Image 1 (cartoon, helix red, strand yellow):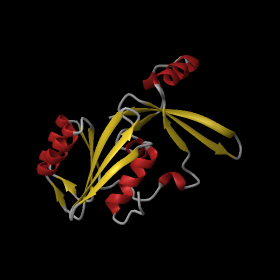
Image 2: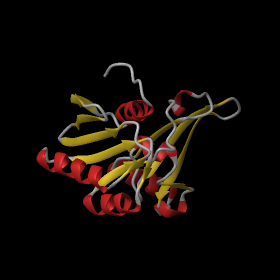
Image 3: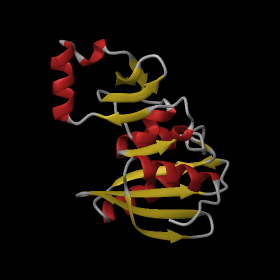
Image 4: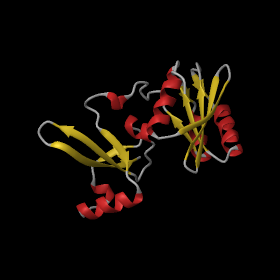
Length: 179
């Protein structure tokens, strides 16, 4: 992927990097960019809507058609507001809408932001067993938190946070992802 130019492309680059997605191909038009992505057997289609103040249901339907044609999951990025219809139908169609409030800079490059990772099923079981806890007993992080959006966390996931501290050295903490 070349150097991102627009805010939408910067958000797309963050999501591609931290969700460990591979760009298979890119199609550019005047007002949109379509990324065809993969991670293992999973396929994704990411639609970036450029320079629109309002993003309506027509774009959601277009992304749904692209995703169905590829058998893939859809992700939409825009810098404008999503209409009510776009928001409610995207959820029903399984399209993930990335909010325009998501930072365009790499938050993980800041010295105070530690590494965040979604635990696999096996890791999750080990952690729950080790702490004799249920997932909801860990501190919560909202699915709308920028970090959760960037790494692709869903409600019910457990996130491991690994950082460095002058007093404690290396530390691990966990967060439960909620709506």
